[in-house]
Amino acid sequence: MRALAIAGLLLVHASAYASPILIVQTRGAPVLPALAQQVTLHANEAVEVEAAADADPLTFADRASELVGSGRAQLVVWIAPVDTGYLVFVAGRSTGRALTELVRIDASIGTAEIERTIALKIAGLLDVVVLVERTPAPAVAVHVPPPIRNDWRVEIDGAIAYESHERKADGRVGLAVGRTWKHAPWIVVPALGAYWQPSGTIERTAGRASIIEVGGIAMIEGGRTLGPLDVFVRPRFVAAALTARGVSRDGRSGRATVFAIKNVRFGALAGCDFALIHRELAIDDSTVVDLGKVRLHVGLAMAVSL
Image (cartoon, rainbow, N blue to C red):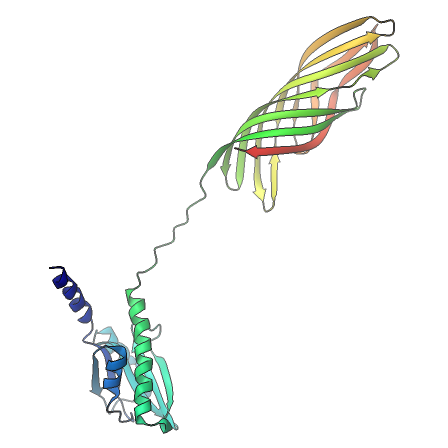
């Protein structure tokens, strides 16, 4: 049963054309008695020869295309005499053009060599035509937008915070965790974090003091990719607690802790803090540390996507 099915398929394929190869003897074509036999030998396909002595070989292309289009043959071959030799033309549905110059042959090589050369050229072209016709058409390309990628981000910051008052430059360490939404080339990252900023001992006439600042951060980052650069804006809301210890010149000491909701911060490698309340640390009514309301900070950030 399977053998019968295969035979049926072969029969349908073979009957798609009345003859796979049709050789038309147009006006002035050379007498090549063994050409059909040579083509059958090399191409392994049935060959039909048709006489058309009145047809002009140089204007036969339209008629050849009609023969191919009607299913008469897969390839139509004809020969035109030129100068000291012959031009062999071929028309086919899958040759890419209605008329193709297959080969130019010098008549001096002899009848047998002419027949063999034409047969080999036809066999090679037929292999290409069959491959083209049996190759399925490529699937229609559909543009698929890049998927939205969501992941977690852990960011570790090392920065220097600078104030114009007594604290001047302090080191700051921060840690933040955020959820990343990516839709190329855009990115949005809401995050929560914390930082720690200690100040060294500050000496003044009234005494000395030291401050430790701890803050919590809520922020959202929006940005996009511009070639090799990532450009983003990151507004941040910070709530901080400051613990201060002061010692007067006569040895008296004390501690103070204040809470402040201080700033909205912008920037990638640089930013500034704006305090809503102006804070000062005083000993005996003399200002030892003026915390000010404006603070600049610069630093480097390392972000890791998880």
